[in-house]
Figure 1 (cartoon, rainbow, N blue to C red):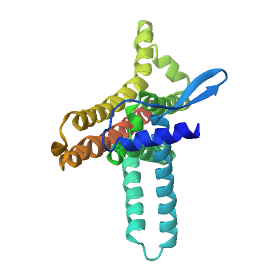
Figure 2: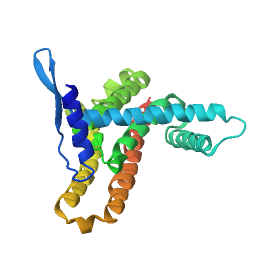
Figure 3: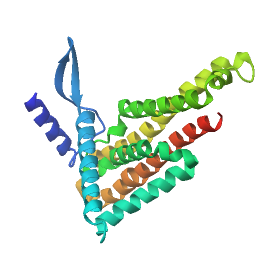
Amino acid sequence: MMSGMATGVSVILAESSSPDFYIHKLAPINLFGTTVYITTTHVCTLIVFCSILILAFAGRNSVLKHKDHPSKFSAGVELAIDILLKFVNGTMGKAGKNYINYIGALFCFVFFSNISGIFMLRPPTADYGTTLCIALISFCMIQYAAVRYQKLGYLKGMFEPIFLFFPINVISEIATPVSLSLRLFGNILAGTVMMALYYGMLPIFAKIGVPSALHAYFDLFSGAIQTYVFCMLTMTFVADKRAEA
């Protein structure tokens, strides 16, 4: 397995010269008689998680260490937190304080996953398995808010305006995680495919300087926009369920 993982890491690093948009199987694992694989998505997700943890611990230590005389890094961390607080509270109002931790974690994971292509990784969010999972987590939070604050009114609302609308209302609820996951997946995968085609089809002299501008658009700009949209929709859906109570 270790040799498989080593080969997998070399495959990921090799993407710096010839990236592609395929999900590669790196190491097989026998799980209850079924063979599953560690893929590039798993490895890249682990790298993203570790990067977020390192930055989180570094930011916490910097803020605590420079309480009286903030450094540039600690000031940047405090500014980012302040922007996040305004973002959540501005969208959800007083209820924002209950969701700040989740939205902050969601924002960091989605954003760092989206921009990981800049560092020659395959963005985890270019895998539908990843986007569907985080969309389902948000969906559970949306449904929990609906049941907690609307109680039986939520079930009653599924039959409004008339009983025959029940199947349509159910489909409308189920469509929420599907639309959230597909929107994020489609946009990030499109950027990954475009960069792979660029690196794979054009000659070497055409790759000098130009990829940085393309990465800035497809990874950084588009990644930031999709992160904002995903988090904004999550907060909007939750806030709507609470407001209907």
